[in-house]
Length: 258
Image (cartoon, rainbow, N blue to C red; front, side):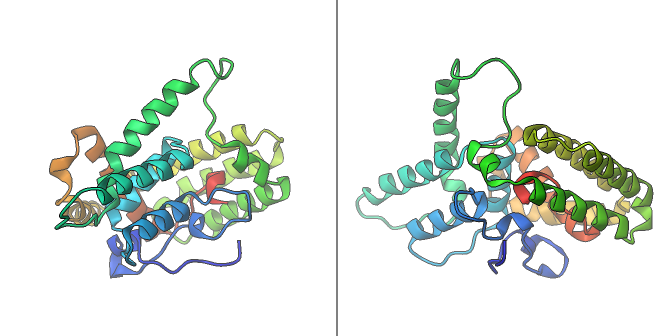
């Protein structure tokens, strides 16, 4: 990972409007799925104009990634939506948001999931694709976890000091007992990240949290009527946590962000 795309994304939600994107938006080596960038590139290519994705678009992508929706499913759904749209006569409107593709993504993911039944032996579902696991090296995983632990230890936020130290200690323990099962490692990192998410929500000053929630609500206002309650709440929570992580300088931990 040596370059960083400088697009406007979820950063517009954050204080000051600074366009900041997580480590996942760095270019990955060949054969590694750069989930977010690939989806962004596909949408912009079919859109035909250099239209920047909205905070809701990034929340949708984040939600798909969290649910392990395969990249090829999302890309195929985007192509299907635009293919159908291009066939419509007398078009007086354009597709301005990735949200327009949401229903097709869900439909194709449901079909893909149904096709997987019986394809694998019983056991927990995998969070990492085979391509992702193949692209990882033990050295890269160690460096990723070490940087995350050091970042948490150096974080100056005293309101989160105890939680940051506990999370860093869990990362150190993981490093000390690191095996070669990256699926297990990723699940452990997800558990530690969830612990930090709860700490952020519990320790952020109430008035500041209220302001952030108001900001996120404003970002989602135009889309709320088209979303069911569960989808809205999930998207809202994802966007709120993005804001909190940026405010407090908390890194993402999962191997996807390596």
